[in-house]
Amino acid sequence: MEYTLGNSYARINNIETAMSSSGRIIEGAVMVPLRFVGEAFGAKVTWNATARSITISSTAPLLTSISPEPTGNSASNLMNNGFAVKQGKWIYGLENEHSGYPTGGNGGHLYKVNEDGGEITTLIPAQARMLNVQGDWIFYIAIDGIYKIRTDGSEVTQLTDSSSSRA
Image (cartoon, rainbow, N blue to C red; front, side):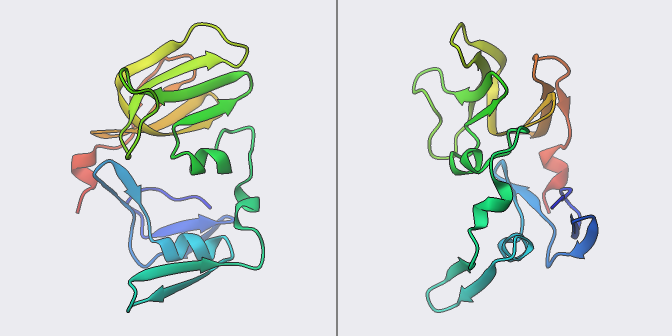
């Protein structure tokens, strides 16, 4: 599945599929319709209006389609809120100066460290959230939009401006 923020469609296996509403950034988090994502991965999505709850069910394990890959976009990364991603011999993470790993949705400084140990290298000192590594790029959310940075810490590029993506 491939989705570009703001579009009213996503590509599933290279086929454009309409969404009920487009995704957007709300308080620094990317939001997309849950029903669309669940059904895209073959799950049944049910809304209980009385309980105001959503149930996602499947006869197949849902995370098998997003199992750990060499790109860093793994099931474990999704489960840990994107606070740490391992790719090759490198671990990329978010850490607050005073409290260690971020909690409650707050981000931290982006760093990297070799899995064999060694000194932590700060890539950006500003707050970042929700890491994802694709090839030589790290993607993350900051207070003012979505960014990418090379895994060596170079070429910081702002991809979206959060003020222009809010409806």
